Structures are given as C-alpha cells and as structure tokens.
Length: 140
Ligand SMILES: O=C(CO)COP(=O)(O)O
Image (cartoon, rainbow, N blue to C red; front, side, top):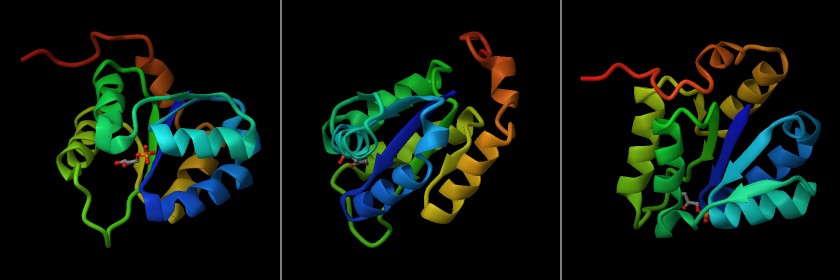
C-alpha cells in the first residue's frame, strides 16, 4: 500500500513516535511524505520515504495530486488544530480529495493508530480492488 505521512510542525514529535512504534508495519509499505515530515520519518526509522516539497511550498498539493490519480491508499495527516497555517487552503484541498476518493485519512494520533492496525489486519485490502485503475473515478 502507498501511505502518505504528513505532520504540522507542532505534531512532528507525535509523528516521530508513531512511525517508530509502527515501524515494522510501515516497513511493508511504500511511504510518501511532505518534505520536513519525510526527512524526520526517514531519519527516525531508516525506511525509504519519497519526499515531496514542504507543505507550505506545495507538498500537500503534490500528495493531493497523487490521490486524484489513485496513487495513494491511505493518509496520516497529523494536523495542528491550534495553529493557523499559511497554506490552509492546500490542507483543506488534501482533506477534501481524500473524501472525494474515499481514501482512509487519519488526522490525529488516535485514528492513526487505528488506521495502521487496520492496515496490518487487512482492513484496507479493499484498496487493492481499485489499485492501478486510473479510470476508477466516475467521469462527469
Ligand atoms: O505543512 C505541512 C502540511 O500541511 C507539513 O509540511 P512539512 O512536512 O514539509 O513540514
């Protein structure tokens, strides 16, 4: 599965703890991330991470584009709900696209743990039915 990992600055320590705790599960999947988050994840776990631009410089949009192309299976986005983000429209766009395309999305540590445990138990296997199908979306 292709997992996108994103964390706002104040949530990066939580992201680091999460990926260390679930390293063995994450090791079996392809990881994608916004720039700074990806560097932290790669350094903490030693796992390969495809890093995009930093969030404020377009990283959320790049991951959103992958979602629209059916190239992401789950998103863990540890958002900071207490700090205004200069790129809030990009953040909202990424969340919106996850909802448009029914992509499992965790926005806090509690749900992220459920998602990763579910991933490990096959609960995301429904994604295999649509994987590789760029035509899966209804055309308007
Ligand atoms: O701002 C972010 C997501 O909106 C995260 O970006 P970085 O991982 O580059 O800090």
